[in-house]
Length: 427
Image (cartoon, rainbow, N blue to C red; front, side, top):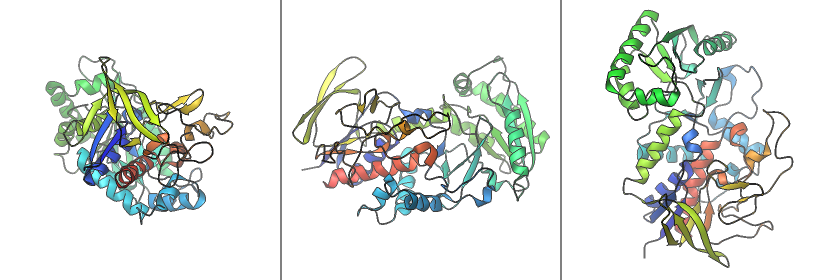
């Protein structure tokens, strides 16, 4: 009899679990409704940030993602990475992450730039520089690889993208580095016909249209040639559906590196990634139910069934053999904020006090809230007892780590998703 695994969720953790279940020869049903945090994704695929980093530290002294991963496990023995690394299924966490990311790239047709061996530094629309491990397909401009380069930052009239501020910040930061990463940083502001003011979504959709693609392409090439740029930084709005086509045309100028900055919500790169996840769910490799889970049925220590409701209000009950919960935190609806509980099974969520720090950039413990899990990623109750013997958790519905301050969000999602899928199949 073929093993069947159901997965609730449609983000990176859920898709990682689904890919693993299929690779193990089992069948899978994915239940997903509204977009979660993936649709807000900036484009940075964080694995681990340097826990030893200090303000104004030279870029070349920041620990690589690989060394940051080891340092994070060493400093936080209760971190999810430490729990995963101790699991007998994974002999080497770093190798496991690389292998699963490569498989994810292939399944989603979503090539990443970067590695665990060295940092990737990329500008943000806030005028800052972000250190990460990997970035999305259109964001492959690493400041650490621009020695002697001439960086041109493109602004678009009417679009809220602080090109001048970003240039000033980058000039200030690069001049403080022991190695000069750019010989020059320039700004050009271009106009888009018939769009005196625009939102990122409106412009991205307009750039999918052939006439605008042609004129946009010509304008960029002209400005780049006049500036004699070697690298061109674009706002993260370069198309929604036809981004690959636009960049393939730009990259015909092989001597120039074209790339987008990271994004802030509403994120066009996040929506592109969400569309890749949707395409995977509908390619026939998994059974996909586009609906919300409205009710669960359990008996003793087993999940027996879940009831789904689609957008038309139609309900369906799905019998459960094994279930992976990858419902996210607050954006995805995996947790109820008040009272702080897990949404579907009313499982307990530890509530460290205070949940919010007095300062904006403080340690907001609410962001690390989530389910407690055992060594096999199975949720436990207040007394540490197994909640359900056929339930596993993956991604940010699990607590005990801070994705933002520890820079580990995507790494944890991919690792726990893959491992939960594997454990569910072999239970």
